[in-house]
Image (cartoon, rainbow, N blue to C red; front, side, top):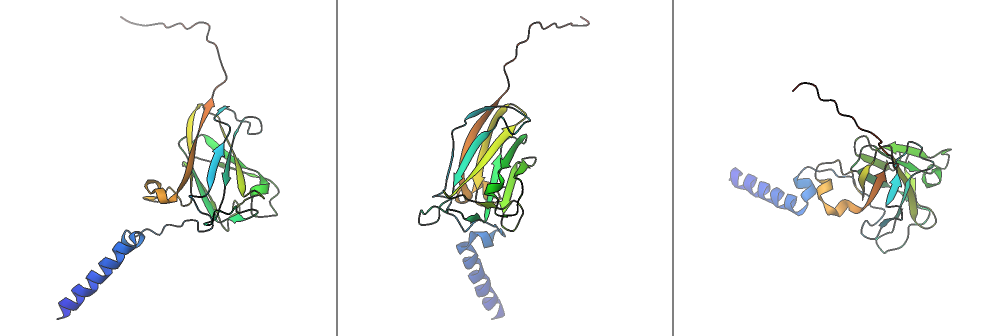
Amino acid sequence: MKSRKLFAILTLVAFMMTLVPALAFGGNIEASELYNRDASEVYTDDLSVKVTTDKKTRYAKVYVEFKDDENNILANSPIDMLWLKSSMTTVKVDVDKKYLAKSEATEGITEPFATGVVGFKEGESNQLKADGNGEVEFKFYSSLAGTAKLSFWSADPAVDGVDKDSIYFIDEVEIKFTADDGKVDVVTLDVDGG
């Protein structure tokens, strides 16, 4: 009799876990509930930019426009969380102080993609705030040439399974970082031995 009750309880628990996949696989995924990732948009006019170590002169501007579930622009609204992922770890992102939620911020911030992911979260010094148009402007620059895929997420893509689940994916842009043109006059190869 006890084994039947235990079996019934375990069956009920297993059934309930299938209804909520995050519980079934132990995921405690923290995702934004403020903005709608489907309604929000990512765009840029800068598809190619020269490489630099000077973030003030050469960068690609990428904008994220935040909207709620009813497609309303989230003007002058703090953004609870946003993650950016770069395919190039040499890329850095710069955010002007006017896009930071903390009004006492005296300067903007620069975040490196050393681990491939940068997070902006509520309660942290780098929490974002959309402007009057519901937008946040990001400036991306790199000291190394290459093509970077920059993706935007409503949950941390470094958490197991998030980067494979489109429910957290907002959008992606591709920026080509190019080196200055150079010219090689002479190349000499000396081969030793036979």
